[in-house]
Image 1: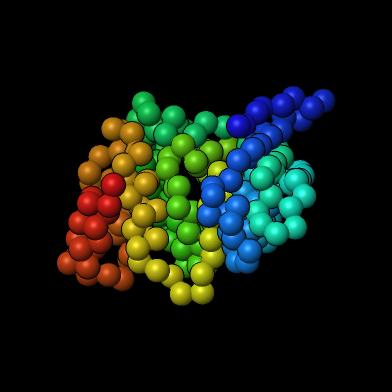
Image 2: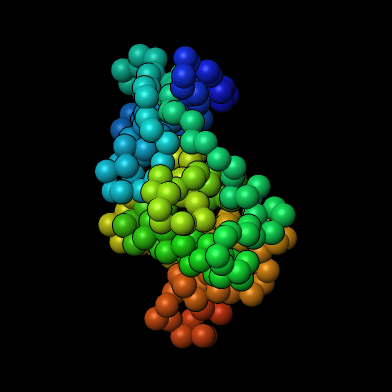
Length: 216
């Protein structure tokens, strides 16, 4: 359960987990014994240290359990103000002063591809990288004139591995692909792959594109 809580001049999101899978309840060691709230707390802080835009963590807690995963946990984060990427692009690419809509579109596609590429190159995988899990906040550096500052949210399932695995990359890219609104054309999606795989051949990108199409 997730609640939006107004706390004075701030808005917090409180995510509460009241049940865990049976395999976690029976686990005595490994990542399964870490509560969902604790996992997301660790992910948020790890990504912040790595320079990614994510919600600011406030607190987390969990019930006491000495032998397996705690059965209840929670995490509190500050609200990231802005629409989801899905909503942001629902009516098409935005217009910005001094730039054509086509230029803005190219900028957005290139920015998103670069961010996701950096995320994966750092060894991270989201596992739920849908457009609704990217919040487009106003860029903190107003003078930059950037279209927005996307923040990653819903980070409970994020993992980090030393060697990037193609199957998790494909899963994340497939989630973005299938959750993108109709305003994102097939040409835009191909541009995204070109920016994500700048040194890959046409055949290599087409191979990945086929895996993305058949993933979900």
